[in-house]
Image (cartoon, rainbow over all chains, first blue to last red):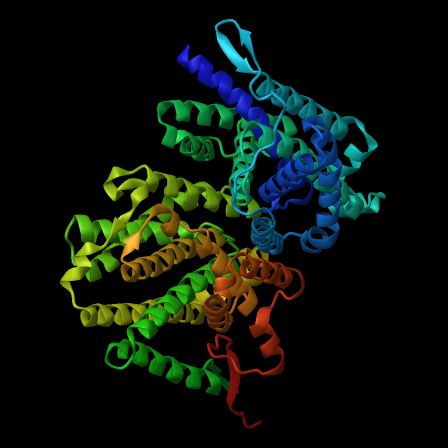
Length: 286
Length: 333
């Protein structure tokens, strides 16, 4: 029972990690770049949301509906101002540019919001729980998991069935060939980053409600997103989703073994997957 | 007609002389410099070494790492354990501790080289984070509380200054001098070819994978050396300070601002970083915002760095690696 509870908690935690991982998988799939500010943007959006709730008194759902478009706008801006200049075969420029931006962003948040940890009040939602058989499960984590599942399914459907999804898949397969048949890569890239950071609007709201956020937390969220993507296997949004579940379960079980071991257990599972199945759990060998 | 290959230039000879004088001055510091200056010079030497190792990785090997603090921390901890727990002479322990990053670099590379470019970088970060957590949970190194190098009290301040200055000079000689010798050798040709175009280099018979592996291990040892020296002078180590992200941060800043793919750039960047840290470090977050934005701007608009800018105007390398063909005699027809 102890372990089943751990697995359930892990799956619920994985719901949050899936929301970090989706955007990263999308951006890497399309542009072959990693945005090092990915985690910092979660924190930035969360802090904006918390301040917004403090000043205006809007509830968590109001915060969520504000943060998603704000995130999309930030993503679009990031693409136009920075990422479009560094997309290319050489991984160095995009990494260094976003690495520098990440340092600047973390410290700018430190200046604006100070190093205090903050959280978003959910109006009693955090305490609510439901009884499933012998287990008590928090309502909020279940909402997060459902949300993550819907987002993953939605993103998968957009990629499979819409005109935008086709142009995005074309650009990720061969950007020059796609440009020849009328795809505008810059528009596709900007939309991909806008979607990726828009999804972080969900992640930010839920992160701020489930636990606390502080300006220096971003790198951890980046690493969890990355581990989820690699564990699941590159190039598939359901892979990222499953990777997030595996990461969540590893951490939750690790925490049960020893509270100091939780995060490390996630890293160890990541390294083990890299050693045994480097293409990820879901990717077939190419 | 007969030719000879010339690599050394006048500027190179002057630089070698200046470098030898500088190393001599560093070794002799305990007899003329203040404790504060000695400490500063050792710190600067560690910055230069870590940055130059990152330069070899990213500038020549095409391996962008943001987790070099893994090797700083592992070597420094190995040195503390050997000296403090096992009773080995601390100055000998600095040398022995380099076994740890060398041994660790092999499995790390074998695991991470499977990841594509940018993912490799984040992978190195995960490894550094994992090692920090291991150190935090390890009773052998006193967990999160960290360790103190109390054995150093058996030496006088003057003896410690001699050892520190000597190790700083040796560190510079190994990392900067060693890089230069490597770049001048036939491996250097292969590395430069790899820097310019890995695919073309492979087609010319360069074993890119093997070279990358060797560079990764060598950089781990050089970075570890800097870590062991740095924390020997600090006398205290904790997991957050040993595996501090700031090591990656400063290496990237120094190399990018100075000019990636050149040793001269590292020296220029390190001096700029050192003084910026000294003068503006007190502004804390605002200073780091500027540092981060400068790194961003360099990557966006100014990828050749300060040395690249200088080189456009003056053709006077300090560490010449270019081979020039000089005609010795003309055949009489």
